[in-house]
Image (tube, rainbow, N blue to C red; front, side):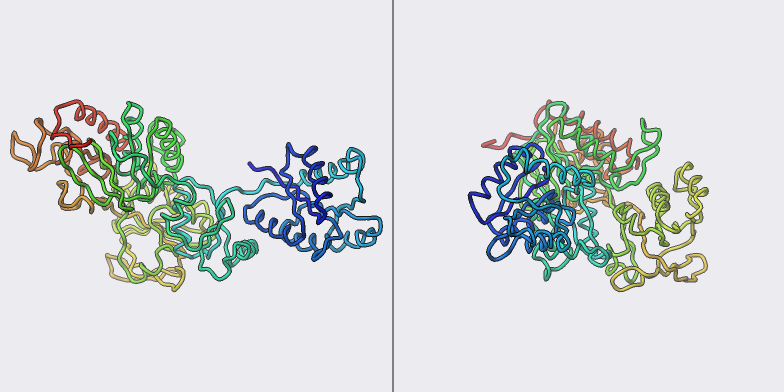
Length: 563
């Protein structure tokens, strides 16, 4: 944490040097002492400190400065740092101005020049002021600040990206928070489109793309090498488990993630049936622990980068990323998981991110306090989200196409939903239309049994339906089933006693191996996988075991020249 600032201002260079020297000698261990040679220069520095979200504890200003007097400076600085203590350096003839300033700028004290010896005439006064400031000081948030509109889809996407990548941020609503307007003005972004993202160093980005934001906040967006022992695509539970076991066993491992670590599991508000956590844990907690573990063993995580193309030649797998970078390895694990299926109804495109959300959207929980919302879906993720959102919302309605939750949701969740006073289930229901221009205002619900439609005043809808595998980039490369899930091991299509078409290894495919030797599939992306976190973790670990067997066996092809 950066130290609070003591700011000294005087147009006399020798006096300013003496003030700064005495302040640093006595307070330098606990405060940063800064200085400026004029009121105008001081205001520019103070504005920059405000942008950087630094704390200013004390401003010591000379009264007789050309262009801007000390009193005028303190008056202009008051809105920027209202809690900072203010002291005026004066000559005997300026005492009237100092006394008048006590009321005008809430002056805390004035000191007569010279102040020698400081041990008697300077430090006792400032010690008292700083002790008083410390008593009421609350450390400021140090991180990313976002200025935007409550129902902005761009703002929602940025907040979701930051929270899922474990980056702390503070949200400032331009319509309700006075600080938002002030910060936007200080950043020089009055006319720039929202959202405006102010970084910890004070630099501001207007409506940044996710890749640009990732680079600015220091996420790892470029690979450190061209060739690795193991490439893992996807950082859900299966991918993170592969990275932990691969890196811990000496493989140079890199993970590629298109959005944020954790996958669908990372968005879960509560996981209560994961072995070893009897009171449950959130998806964010599980992700944080797994990412820290993988990094501890030396795994490299690239985000946000998407795998766009896979090519194999002479036993090496070349992976092209969304920024054009190409990395290669002799072993690759596909762990891209699945994504929630999109609903199809009028208003969906317009209101996605502005009231319609896919997944738990934990960042929106506080914003729905006291409002009526809906959850679409009958699986465990939908049930967990409904219970979590029920802590904040006035009511939560679970919309399901079927007749009950019993066939699709774990018994313990069904029982808890039955007991929740503000969570209800509406069977035979689908969304027919979303209403609202810039934000969701109401939803038309159709009863699939009777065909009747009813409009409900809902402010947010959270969707958890189906599971679409993220394998478009693998079509024509690996064997996929009709839904796009990856075929591996016994599911591969091939003649008895022979490998699948194009198979080049002198052995049959391993259990999790795809139609290309050395390329494995783990987790939800694999056909007929068990859609449970523990299963995905187990497959991620098992895949690494097969990777070792593949790397230690006869090569599937000759090593390419020059590698």
